[in-house]
Image (tube, rainbow over all chains, first blue to last red; front, side):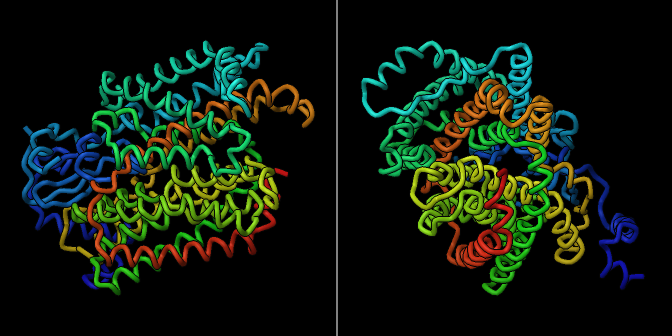
Length: 89
Length: 466
């Protein structure tokens, strides 16, 4: 089962199993979208990411609700989560 | 703006997902509301024997300053009304998107006046001889102003490249028969898919061979293969890239996109490609919608004017649109899903807080494409029952042509804004390895796009809409 979940985790059923497994090691907490370290305001991102407004936009649908995590210096989905979650004030 | 300033200026963290608020918080939807609004008003006027023609004024062909003066003297009120129309609808949309009206309005005044000058210059009877095509003039003038003179940063509120191009694409849908989308769409998807997959793999493998991180390689690859800067930022989010990766990819994409705005039309001209074939080539080998429209519209202006360039301006723009928008842009969500799955299961399985969600195919879908298709359906519906002769006599001049003229304005706002917002000194330093990896992909992309457009699928693109 471990082999299957490692190599075929893209299968939805196995992915569910994998997420259930990983939930055990993931501390309880909110998702990035409601974390104080997370920024996904369109204007903020256009200022933070040089060139974004030149041939695209912070308000484009393709960007979904992704944003910058100031804690880990990553650009990622608002639906992600991590152990350093800190509720937004 | 420094990182500290950004932190100070940052808004509080927003709610988890944007949900239905996307309808008024994303520019794609505003492009639909504005573009379809214009098309629907145009249709209502048409159905009642009237037209948008009066307000869709454009500069006429001219060969002397006297002619030019007479045109503006006779049509000053129409230009004023059109300016007020654009100002009202764009102010509404952009304030909803979070921009300040007090910044947007003066900026748009500058943009509109400059666009009138650029459009007028392009209508000079000698413009083709001196290569004064409006897209190129707008781009170069904008680049000169932003890089040599400089404008206050707050004026960027009016230089919304993507918003203008998306509005223009929705309006373009009204000039494209729906049957043409159905007929040529599958060919465009096939050709674009071949080029996109090959380009992505070439850039990804080249980047890995050069020692770059997999996430950066994917971000670069998507920028070259799918839809330029938009694809890079979408894939950066999907794979949870380090924050410096998206700016690196964006720099490389912008540099190559600007090179291609000039290279593709002039190479096509030198090779005397038919307008539809060149449009398809530009659609497979340009990296961003806005840059691609600049190239396609430039080449369209050569059609029928430059000896040896067959076809019509519409064929260049339509082929480009089908290839880029239908063939490449709409698949960004699928690319994001696949790369998110690979990223979370193979590259960083220990990052258990991220997971690949199938719903992102919809979240990331470029919604303005829905407006493009809806506009095509509306005008196709309006034109039902008319013979070709009747269409050309009744429907085209009163319904389609005014929408096309308004589309041309939207694109000029876009082209000028590209130049005005591209400040080379403020782009992130990309480094030689990302530039080299991307450049390898560009070479393969251009050659493969040429091969497929000029040889394999040439009959489709040459005969588009004939």
